[in-house]
Image (spheres, rainbow, N blue to C red):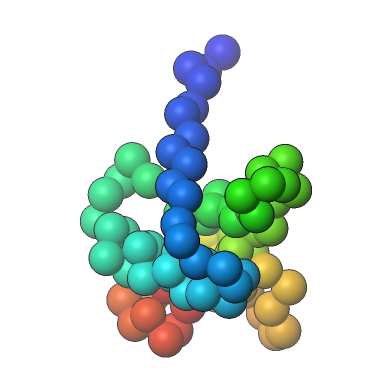
Length: 89
């Protein structure tokens, strides 16, 4: 049995889902070197509806240990994270 993981809830002053998604992407780019953060599991929720979560990235398992870094419900095949933020990673 593995130990339970801890979740960090990080409230923002943002009022639009698109802005919160962009912030999550910027945090992933700037903190991707921190191995303790599982960005593939990132979800967003409204302040007063925290039990309703919106997944940010697809995170499907790919060959090897990689996971898809494209947005949830993306078109086309899954792709792993890349160093280029515009490339989904």
